[in-house]
Amino acid sequence: MRWLITGATGFIGRRLVETAPGPVTVLARDPVQARRVLGPVDAFRWDALEGPPPREAFEGVEAVVHLAGESIAGRRWSGPYKEALSRSRSQGTRNLVMALQALPSRPAVLVSASAVGWYGDRGDEELVETSPPGRGFLAQVCQDWEREARGAEALGIRVVLARLGLVLGPGGGTVQAMLPLFRKGLGGPFGLGRQFLPWVALEDVLGLIRHAIETPAIRGPLNVTAPHPVRQRAFATALGRALGRPALLPAPTPLLRLVLGEFARELLASQRVLPQVALDTGYVFRLADLDEAIRAALR
Image 1 (cartoon, rainbow, N blue to C red):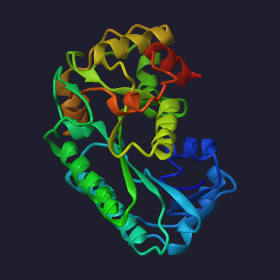
Image 2: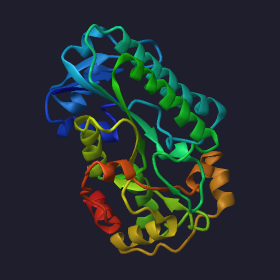
Image 3: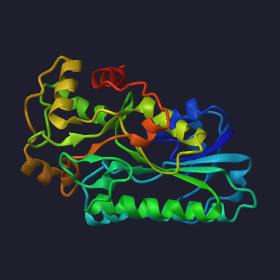
């Protein structure tokens, strides 16, 4: 089975290309650079905001995995950056679906990335795929993003909306971003640390994407999170324990807001997300224990 992957040079995309069970085609702004990063793959140029990708890129493709989009945690959320975050997801996904519509023979499944930000800040409420959407900027971005992806359903394509949690893995993701402070003994919880943090190991992100492609019963939202969300204070303690460093200094809420702007609101949000669809369809998590997942991310 040939997969087509967008966002293939990113943290998740690189590993997805490596572990795909068959040949891979990628769409990238710079196909030459993509081949340098990924090795011998079929790469086609596509700027997600310019228009649909080329038809020839879909030759023989049976599954599409759409990961492309500006990094949510890349920088302070200014007005222009928020616009770029939203457009890269909504317009990019719309252009991808337009390309699928024009194909004489279409892939069977589209797995389109989304995020647990869809649920907004929900306190201690347990959130599954059938829970209602939340409020706020990121929640609205995710809802618009998913609506564009669902446009492929009218084309007879099975659509899976992969709502990603905070990904733990070597070479990137949540743990790598926190390492500098924690290694200096300056790490700790954000705010009061009582908010739930829906984490997931990179190995299970890859496993769940493949599970979604290979399981026809999965349609619509799929929470890509570990089955045991923890409070942010417990996560900070586990990371400090793995590094042999204290994790006692909380990052004060006013400081987070000063440094990160509106993005601080998302870091302080509580999302007790459970992967109900994954469990109901027989997926067995490879790294369901937080301490084990953190150790794997540090290797």
